Amino acid sequence: MSRICIVGAGFSGAVLARTLAEAGHRVLVLDERPHVAGNCHTERDPPTGIMVHRYGPHIFHTRHVRVWDYVNRFATMMPYVNRVKATVGGRVYSLPINLHTINQFFGTALRPAEARDFLAGKRRHDIAQPASFEEQALAMVGPELYHAFFRGYTRKQWGIDPRDLPASILKRLPMRFSYDDNYFSDPFQALPRHGYTALVAAILDAPGVELRLGCRFEELAEPFRHVFYSGPIDRYFGCRLGRLRYRTLDFEAFRTSGDYQGTAVMNYCDEAVPYTRISEAKHFAPWEAGQFADTICHREYSRECLAADTPYYPVRLVHDQATLADYVALARQTEGVSFVGRLGTYRYLDMDATIHEALAAGEAAVRMLAEGARLPAFFVDPLG
Image (cartoon, rainbow, N blue to C red; front, side):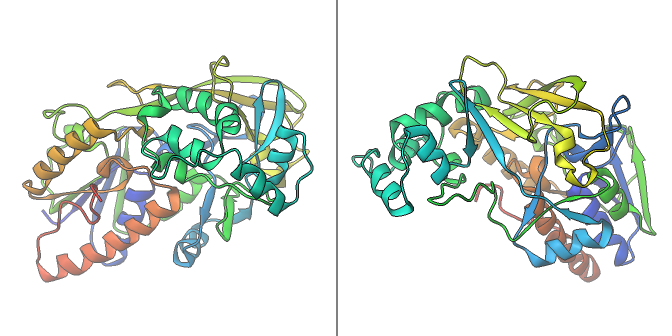
């Protein structure tokens, strides 16, 4: 029972495996998919040769110097600025909402201070404490921008009326009174030159780490010193307390010659358009510009996640939070397993946060194993 088992070969599992292996532990990493990197998996599209994000676009961004230094150990990170566009009512705008978006949408030529005053007159000032996504939007940008950019897109993305979604979802989105159209504000923004799969494979390439793909945890008979589980927490327990809800994504690929949309991501905010966005893969690698005569794009559709689907976004409404609390209590009574990562803790996590938490969990686990202490069910509070 000297080996440690890590279920899932995404960023959580890979970073944990590397940390434990570098401390002298023998580790088995398994994943039921035929590849590493989880939903960040990248590969070359055979007909075009273009690097494709198979489970949707992933842009690496962080303000954690330690995380930035860590990924640079294993990959050449190429500077990349995510500039998202949006089609609304047959016109194209820049996202996140910025001074250009405001002036273009309202047909104005406002300066920053003028735009602040202008939007102040649009906002709902009678909503002191927004309780829903819709109230947060109305208090933040007013009804015109809300209905144009947020309402339809949100209904498509979540399958839920914005009046029933928490305000916290919108609070994550920036709004700027400048012409800065960089979607993120973190100081480090990049993409791995050779894709995320090569990056994760390099992290896993360490003495003491065995990687087993196309293998389900339920199939194993080997006893382990401890298990780190980065799959869905409800699945570990056979969904005995009910299924946690996720949204999943379907991708419709199409190829054409030349350049289809001139940008990496185009959101479609009108509810009448069934897909949420179109991504054009070759624009995620500007350092390869001019190498490809053809292009590949993906229309992205969001829907409820069924049992056989790939889970993407935890819903985390009141009922889901209650079900999660039941699973957390059950996990804390279960010895020999720790739940980690996006699925194991049922939280939305960016890649940098996933790596940051996995590094901290791995280091804590190394100390506790050396002391003979019992490892916790969670290294972060999923309910926090």
